[in-house]
Image (tube, rainbow, N blue to C red; front, side, top):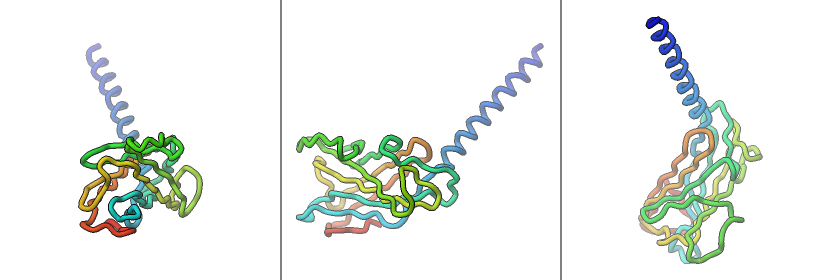
Length: 169
C-alpha cells in the first residue's frame, strides 16, 4: 500500500511539472520584440518629452499571436518620480494637476487588435502633466504587458539636450 501511495504521488507531481513547463512555453511563445529606434517628441519649447513611440512585432521565434487591444494590454510609464498605468485617451480626466499617460497602437503591417507573426505595430505613449516633467538626462521606462506573453520593457535615458524629435538608442 505504501508503494502505491509513493508511486501515485510521483505521477501527480510529474503531471504538475508538465503543466508548469507547458504554461511557461505558452508564455514565451507569445513574445513581442522592439523593432527599430525609440523616438521621443518634445513640447514646443523643447523642454520636456510629450510622446514616446516605438515599434513592436512578434519575435521571430514566436508561434502565438499577441493581443494588443486596450482591454488585453496594460502599458505602464515609470521614472524616478512616478509610475502611471496608461489609459486610452477617452479616459483622461482633463485635470491639469493629475499626471496621466495614454497609449495607442497603429498597425504599420497588418491590422486589428492582434499582432500576428509578420505584423508590426507602432505604439505611441502620450505623457501629460507629469510631475516633474520628463526632461534631459532623465531615465524612464515603458512596460508593455500583454495578457499572454512576456513583458516588453523599453528603458532609455534622455540626452543632455532635447531636440524636436530624438531617436533614443
